[in-house]
Amino acid sequence: MQTFDYSTPSSLADARAAAAAGAKLLAGGQSLLAAMKLGLQAPDALADLSGLADLRGISVAGGVVKIGAMTPHAAVAASADVRAAIPALAALAGHIGDRQVRNRGTIGGSLANADPAACYPAAVLGLGATVHTDRRSIAGDDFFTGLYGTALAEDEVITAVSFPVPQAAGWQKFKQPASRFSIVGVFVSKGPQGVRVAVTGAGPCVFRAKALEERLAANWSAAALAGASVSADGLNSDLHGSAEYRAALIPVLAARAVG
Image 1: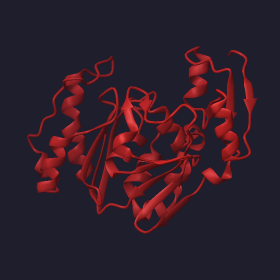
Image 2: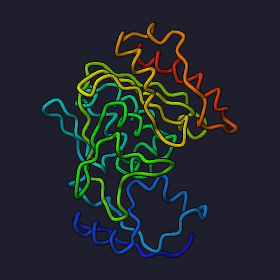
Image 3: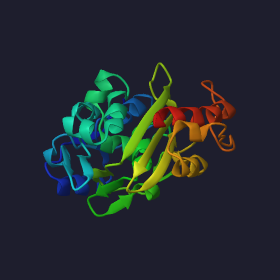
Image 4: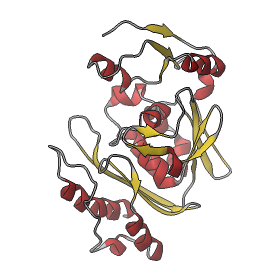
């Protein structure tokens, strides 16, 4: 691993200043450190956010679950408040990676990294969540811009994510057994943001399956998705599955998520 400067900001203002000076922000490090070891990332400086207690924690109020950006996946999965308000979100967090990943990885780090096969992006789109930063609030529909791409500025810091509590929601993931990333993952919900079906793992970026949403808006049931299809155009093909295979999985997993 290459040499780099390392700092531990004691405040959000310090973290912002470090990022503005060119430091790479380090959340859980589950993706960044691995990329550095492989030589895919070579930052000159890291600013470790783990000491910022204000960026941790979970609250439920006014029909919204708000999760601090530095809250680890394991805390979301174990939260009685999350399990009561949005069980599908707790289930999603509880099946990310392995125990080590769940205890080190954070929701803010996952969203900032925007891996095309990550789980949390599906929850953000699937629930119509809002991503809060040190300077603004970004609607989930506007946050993800492409392969590993987000609407974040280089020195912008995610502080929290707000999820509207739905009437119903479900999550299904067909995982790659070694990495436990999604070959295809589908999050569905019916609530304040309407009916939403978000898909991860299948394309270069998380996306909404509008045709499936229309079917479920008319009839919220697994039966409504019988015979539904999704185009394979633009979907991923790799050693784990072809674009056609992923396209075929999407309505199947969506139906299972609806239950």
